Amino acid sequence: MVCLIRCVILGVIGDSMSDDVLYIGVDLGTFRSVMVSSAGQEEEVLTVIGTPKDVIARNFLRRDVLFGEDALKNRLALNLFRPLEHGVIKDNAEDKKYIADFITHIIGLADPEDYGRVVAVIGAPAEASYVDKTAIFDAAAGSVNACMIISEPFAVAYSLDMLDHSLVIDIGAGTTDICRVYGTVPQPEDQVHTSFGGDHIDAQIIREVQLKYAGAQITKDMARRWKEQFSFTSASTPDSPVMVDFSVEGKAMTLDITDCIQRACESIVDPIVDNVKKLISDSNPEYHDAFRRNLILAGGGSGINGLGALIERRLSDLGDVEVHTVDAPIHLGAMGGLRLAMEVPEDMWANLTLASR
Image 1 (cartoon, rainbow, N blue to C red):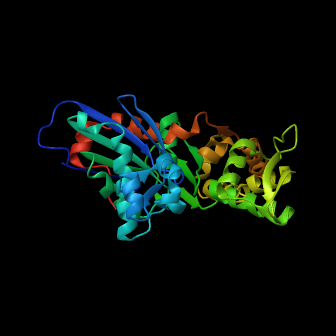
Image 2 (cartoon, rainbow, N blue to C red):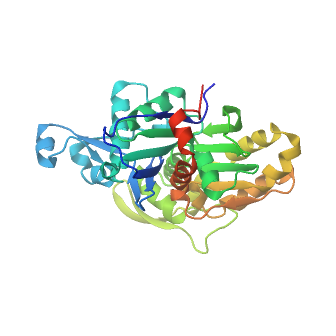
Image 3 (cartoon, helix red, strand yellow):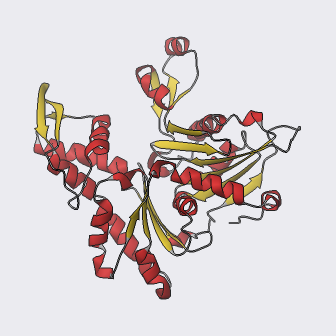
């Protein structure tokens, strides 16, 4: 059984240590990752890595690896990789190197070399395997002195100070993580991990539009932009039709995709509702009411208009249900990690007492 938190001291910054400590919180996302630090840095980086396709590309770019927007901007000259596809790391040397490169890059944005000691708390998917956590942990070893791996939905609850019998629904790009939180570190049985996230919605938008308009030519990036601009459910319908531009067999068209957007966005609701019901029913019955009234909707997918209201409606057979949609969902996981890093007593960092497996 894998515990959600793993902590160890890594003497890697150097022999000369000062009293200056930099605390870092990181949310490793499938599509976007966030880093915040005690020095006030806040950075968002698309979780994508690019390596030059050939020697010409290498000479043109003058770099062996590019990250985030920089990689996407030069994607025609690069081989692109998403190191956290579906929230997991492939268990091979190449992918472990990519995640190591990415973690080194995102922690490096906090200028850790300016501090005598650096500690980081990194959010990982709720059901990340021991292999995944070890890969993330080992990747951080080159940049920090101490590292802790926690579940992303737990980091959200910690950021909000909602540890008293809450249930977090964290909708990311590659995964949706659902987690019971009750004042201590969640165990594996407190969590459910599904692949019904933002990437699934993007794929469903493409499918729905192509079913409606034969010959429609749509890319994943187009679908993602439409989702981010127009997403909604039946609980909050738009005042006017969703009209977008795309090609149908090469011909420029402006067409109505309102129904396509709605069906795609609602395709993640049933898996969420089913798993929420399971986590509540499997918990101590004395606390069922508390969990029902403290559902937290977080992650990038929480921005879908009407999603919280629709989940409440679908859960109404359980009794009175309250879904609280968070503000600023993108940074919450990293902020929770930073808060935890700063609140963990120094002797706990030093004595390695936070985890076992």
